[in-house]
Length: 409
Ligand SMILES: Cc1ncc(COP(=O)(O)O)c(C=O)c1O
Image (tube, helix red, strand yellow):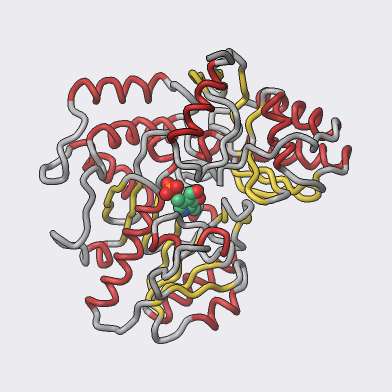
């Protein structure tokens, strides 16, 4: 059959893969740093980073070496046995977060599932009769049924009823509504410090502080979902550190493994102790390979102060987008924290995503008219300027006639 290698992959994918993702017509052969190379040899600046995952960029020598060495030693044994790499990673994460214990899974949804089970069991253990979790409108906590029930967005929940009960949604950044939603059934509040998929909306300090106060006053548990914001992305190792509001439970995934699938839930001692043998588990969770990779990632992020770098480069990116908005009129708002940044457009985002990709820049759309920028934390100012240049070119070309694409959600 004729055609490019990419077209061959496209044909085969269309035949044998489920059609749940809207995939752009590009396949990557390799990556290096902030650049990806496709099957046809074209190069792209990666401001998607595998959806805010690849914090060290692609093929980072330290991460590659850690994975190679661990793979050659031992990949998997299960949690029937002690795993030194898992204990070391838990040691690192607890010491940096101020929480006491860790449990590992394989994704963000799984980390949130574990957090949901943890707060339910905590309430059961106290025979409090409490089971309800207050969540925020516009949140995204994952696609498994429990995490989906905690994601009060119709487009994600549609067609999957009945969902697990016990979730109550309030408007994001509305402390009064949060207080009103807490009843004698409430056991926890679950929030993202920055709503990522919802359009990159940072929480206000007032909102997170109100959540903490409500939890303290009513004996509830505060869960922060830092699946997207954790591991340096927002300018601090964990986003909650910039707010000065401590959670009882913290969930992580995405950046943690730098691309190797791993998720984690961290909790205070008193909460963690409700998980005793037999209560929860995962065959793969925290296996030697994933933990060795995550250790290499977190140590590199810390040693190279990539969180501090995210704060500086994020500011440069936001300033550049604001300037572009002033000059073109095409950007109506810019927001974000660190290297998790969004730009609202005066037009549909999908054609801009396609246009940028055609010109060698990967970005994605988190809402109909909102672009998200989440490059690896190793991005340089030169990379940011190059990305802004491509975006400016695309915005000025009035693209919009092409087919939709580039949005995987
Ligand atoms: C805040 C947040 N929580 C949970 C998830 C789900 O993570 P995963 O896709 O790894 O299950 C995501 C994914 O985008 C997320 O952004």
